[in-house]
Image (cartoon, rainbow over all chains, first blue to last red; front, side):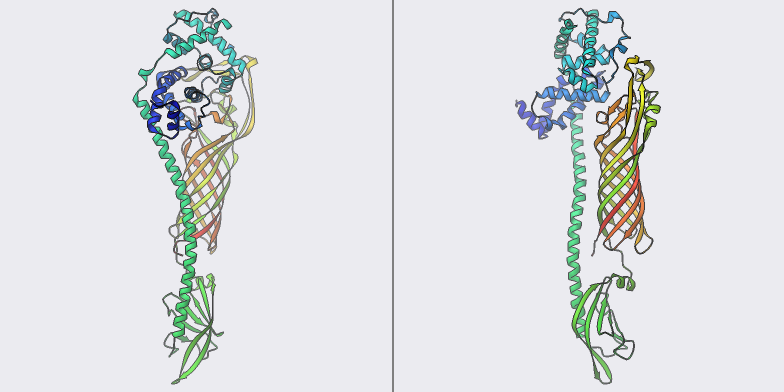
Length: 177
Length: 414
């Protein structure tokens, strides 16, 4: 088993076997990212291929300032956002909130013992503007500033979308439980 | 609201627990590998083209230098031949043999036709100069003619005292029409042009075009100025036909003048806009943008051309062919077809590799060693610059301009 540094170095030299090892090592994690940013499995697979192609052709720019999977995740997110133009809707959340009733928002927190598949399914059912911000902030660890830059919205909008998204997801999970 | 922060932990935990191993297949890697190989091949083709063009440039330079040296050597050899023959020449009967005495006196011109094997014409002038011409050169031989009486005949012995060689293309042209010699031309080309685009709907995504798109955006995009600059190389294979290529830095452009307010947003169902919902007046978005968008390409053209001389110095050339255009840089902003928002071009997806077709026809001022041309030209992309997967519109940029071109000529068998 070769070290991660060695693996990256060999990928930078276009070593095909190292590139395949990098794919195999992080395919599951990246597929999870793809599934969260796509509407269906077919789109997620396309994104997985596009993402890895981009990762392997631009790996020379990876300076090692972060973990390789964090850097890869950022690339996958950028491609997902650019490819589908998702999450770019700059309208305020209250236009979307008109679609929901008050019962759709629940501020009382749900417990943490919920099956992972149910949580992910509920997340995917959220309107895109909330789902993307929840994904980026809660799971992928981007700051509101980064989210704002990537989605072309203000930090304030990012915060309010996150808050509404949490509330909607909470209500959905309660109903599913 | 903070009490819901724990939902982040639920999400994080769920995301870490969900596995998709069963959805990943070896074919996924095969597809990625195939694309990587294709990219490598594309890079090889691109760099090979660049290498071929530059190699041709360097070779043509070397050939040019060798030709000059060989030319000098040939001229020296020709001069030696003529000198030897002329020195050995004893002309017994001027009227029958090589020396054609046009009159009786030495004060008149003497003419000797093709006595050496270099297709040269030798004329003895009354100034006692022997003028020897071939296609391109005039060899002036300063002679001292000595009439010798020998059994009532005049024998002429030519003694060379001074020989000079000078270029005389006019004599060559008038005495003997110049045969075609295959040649290379290389030089620089600069093309100021007006650029715009042809826009069509992408049928697979046309349902996503905003009802206000044409009024607010499509009709507000006009022609703009662009420039092409590059290196030109052409090979003239026959008196009428040539092939040209090169390497250009090419621009396509568009001028935008957007002035509108977004007052509603589209509602999408099954990938189509089904309705528009009004925005809260506080959320109205004013778009006020004037400027030009520039698309920068590296262009490798391959054209076939015909040429027609119209006078001794001018000819008309017409070229037609295909170009490979690689998109290298984008500058500007553009209105989104769906929500009409202004977006940076760098955020949009465009096809990196494009094919264009070009036609140009113009007037060239031709000299033996160089030419200068002025050619109106028209070029249009064959494929859409917008990516068909993400854009509801297909755009094919075009430009029409005037090529200012100057070339240096290198003759293959010089």
